[in-house]
Length: 352
Image 1 (cartoon, rainbow, N blue to C red):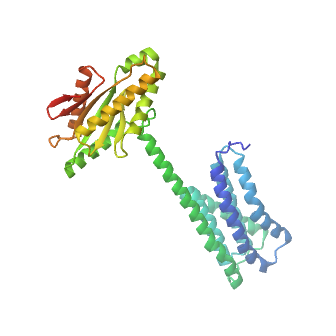
Image 2 (cartoon, rainbow, N blue to C red):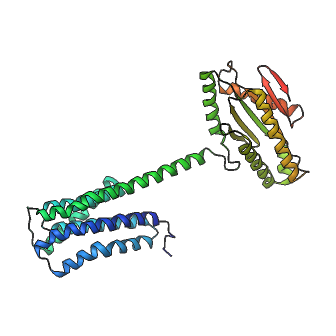
Image 3 (cartoon, rainbow, N blue to C red):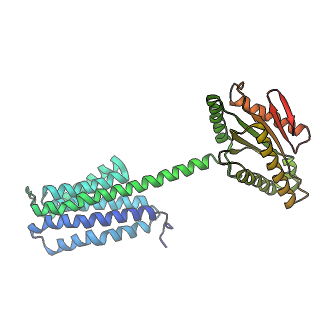
């Protein structure tokens, strides 16, 4: 089992694939750059180890650490060192040298930005210095046609592969961002919109109604005697009741309706384009379903709903005035006996 419990696997695997491809393509480039120089056998052996054994070793090192990012940065610095070494060993042959250094630098920028790019340049410089200590300093000013063609695969394929990896990472990050945004706007207990998110939608709906001269209705829903339920049966039972109401709202409203948890035992719903009489019927049916479900689970629980309804009125100065109408209707529903739907129309109330 890796020491990091697999947490560094995505990063290590991503760089393992790009490193394997890059070093394989780079191997072809370096072979054609080194062949005219007739290097000793140990150079060919090191070339093969660097290209085909090092990617697997680097992958295993990253898997067996608790700091995968730090490990991969060390691995990339070693890649840069080796790249510099081969540039010096090839006597600075222009095209193979520029290709090797640019591909290494591209990796460094992708994983660590400008700061890590400069660290990679230092590692490349160290690699060049090491090569100059081992091989006689020289400069091969001419790139042959064979060497040019040997560099084409890495120049064409490696940027494409790295671009694809970056694209997939961007897609993943965008998905995570959307998921985090959804979580930040969702009430974890009921699964509905939280207070702030619902208020944002209320403002949007208010502006739409005002702009398009269309109607809508909002509902405030309160669970009757919820504190007594918590005190008598415990908060676990209270949470179950809240989840049940959230589930009923999700299952019995239209896709375009927006339900949220306003706070505590109070819920809220925006019903776009729905006239008050239709909204009253919908809320009555929802209240009956909730009551029946609560009674079926525990007749002694006696959970019920009080609901206040308010239609959009052109005279509302803002969304807060609209919400206050629904709050007034809810207050009247609770004051007149609870377990009922109350609808406000202008300055008067209608009890259903």
